[in-house]
Length: 234
Image (cartoon, rainbow, N blue to C red; front, side, top):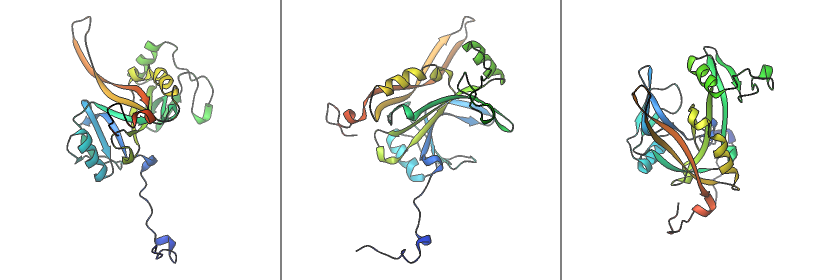
């Protein structure tokens, strides 16, 4: 028999915990050290829930800790892995646009050709046609940078909740159409790999450069991956 104590006072019934934008956590590829950004070789996950941080630590390594932030996700785990299997709910889970922020907030928002700002939506955005010019303007702070957003669940703990990853990487933005096409080839949820790929090269001036770029690799339909060839259940 169900307990009916809230029938007489429904306002007192505890509400399910809601997270900002319904996300339980965020995957990050770096952090701020003082006033300077630092790239990381492994995924960093932030969340508002201690239980979520503990679950991430068990799945991906690392030790949960608190970090200073004005947001809700004050728990963080710098994990031990640069790769994670994720479940993406089709191409709608992947979005990308161009944004430029000023002191007062968002001052330019477009899709690369047309403005997405309320005051002139649909009008030409005025961005350069050539990619090199776009990058140069973004680097100088005079033009927008790409903002790629990916929403997903973890294949190894599907019920843990929905996570998101946001990136301003030009390398990722340049292949968004390829990822979108790969996701569109399936109906419904897709198993994919989200990784931080090491890139190393030497410039013409002889300077060694290395960095990590985010990579999304679509693998197979999630329905086919629930039980793989070896009978492993996700």
